[in-house]
Image (cartoon, rainbow, N blue to C red; front, side, top):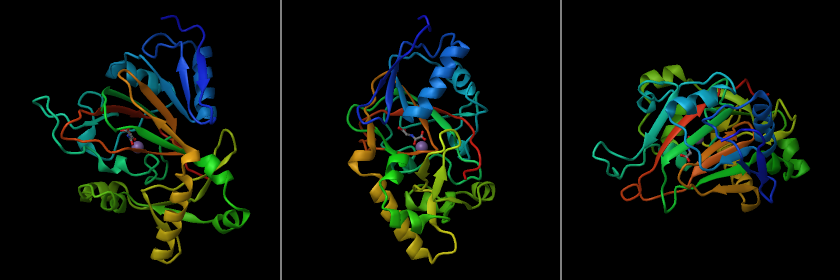
Length: 283
Ligand code: OGA
Ligand code: MN
């Protein structure tokens, strides 16, 4: 396909857009690439249909946005391209294992907020999509911020949340973090209200990796985070991606949260391949 002019069809809500007229496995000019960069900043979530990426072309496309990062969970690293992650519920016999590969994806989160420099963009493709469930939901954290009352904004001003991989695993009922993982990802803290470095828009920055509020009593911090999550995940802030074969999904982690809706891991085959672009220190 000629990558001459792309078409962007924004969601009516203004959150999320479908991008047509581009073959992500083909040559992408600087000009078209700049349009894609502007689109992901503007719409926060991009959907590309009918793509035919393999791991190499997926990696190459993602890398144009910046250096890719590996994942702390070594078990999901791709054999030849360790900076790609692959997780799914398909066994060596090709059958669904019945086990959710990453229960942490079933709860609201923003990628890698448990490190000092959390993920910028995540680019996901799913060679095997669930037919029932397994949708990816996104919450627009800029809109959610803008809908806070002035009193709430004042309360949140200057607060920092502690993000903790170990605690996050416990909360999502995943296998416990290993000693190596805990050493590699000690708790960090980030502002609860984050400013987007490109748009300067403010957004609520929380999710399952956020465990409590720095310098607050634990329970009070957990309650505030739960309240903010309930606020931010109201229907009016959500974009729901229903996967089709050959979709590629890309999002900006600085101003969104996401989760996967449940699916029957004993019946459905769901596999995702993901590339993640390194981010910067949130402010
Ligand atoms: C992720 C994630 C969502 C999905 O890859 O970061 O949360 O749809 N996955 O599998
Ligand atoms: Mn994720």
